[in-house]
Image 1 (cartoon, rainbow, N blue to C red):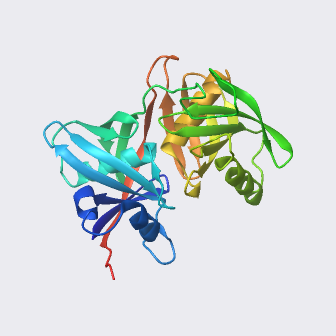
Image 2: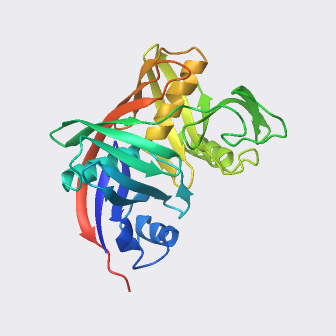
Length: 284
């Protein structure tokens, strides 16, 4: 089976033609097998892409995490999938319209760069109601801001957002040691208040137009960046009044730009997607 590897600021994906996967094995099992970094190829997830209309730029998009679970959407994954389609000349349109489990998402090629592509993606209108995330503590919430979440006998004020997938945002003055935030990320991911588990962002505000974020992704663990996570972190900071409506998100490997003009507007994000390599996986 042929695959192409792309990454977005270190968040790496194996991109496979959706029709080809059907010839081998169930996608979740395939993702678990290929993403293993010691016995497989190694990645944070696999993207299944199928072009439906070359002229209109329409394509199906599915994402499976490294643990084999299927996610609704991925901001970095969308940029990587669009970059793959452009690099392989599989579409002729100036925009890629992806059909995802979270709805249609549009990706625009801003420009080609020395290392790959700069892409602008539409991530939809954020949702905040507990039923939409989902978040279930037995009560109904229109918004969940600075909620006192209990983890190992300690309370953490968290802000919860959906960018088509669930996110729990923790604001901190300084980043803790890796062991500490890994443990906290693992506990929050599987907290019973999140029936579909959740992604977690640890956020340090650096100014009105910049935040720094560490990412713990549902079904993956630590990732060097996250597109939807960066958007969720920016939106959470905005609704708390900590930053302006255009903000730069600093990750371990570079920056993303998130724009959210108003509470009823759609979130957009601009960032890179870079080619890593192509390969073939031999099934035994």
